[in-house]
Length: 215
Image (cartoon, rainbow, N blue to C red):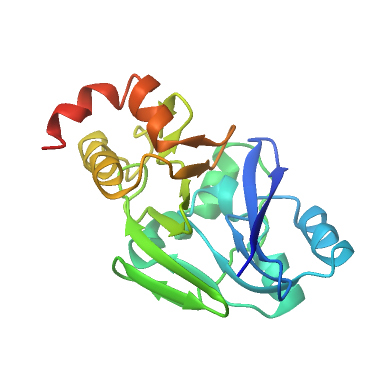
């Protein structure tokens, strides 16, 4: 397998939608298609890609806005952790709160309920449950690359002041990532630039004080 990753920044929150592409088969998985569905569809079609699934790290409105449109276009399944159901169900309310035009709420085809392996077509991912930003937040690891959603950013971490957020739980998730992952792991976040575990352990002011808990 020869992987490539395409980042498409979408919507008013400048959310990172990722396409994980197997260059040998042109199959791809979409992570967190948050907005501007047609923009994402255009890229897929212009590059002759074959989407086979949508996986979300969590279900905040800026990460799910394009899912229904893309699901309908390609008839592909949508994966989400079961503990994200309350967040997903609050999509219409969240849109009203932020003054955003409500899109169609996506339906989940495959509920994730634990950490472990996830095989979809040629892709073998490791699910790592990383709640805290939301109750069912998950990160997805493949070939020393991890998609973390809003759990970890370059120089920062996810907010925990929204419904379902919990700073203590998020800190536990961050400790788990630091313990589990190679320092060389490349981190693809829900917003902003990519980074690495080693960079964040060295420079992130939220991670530095947690390192005395690594054992």
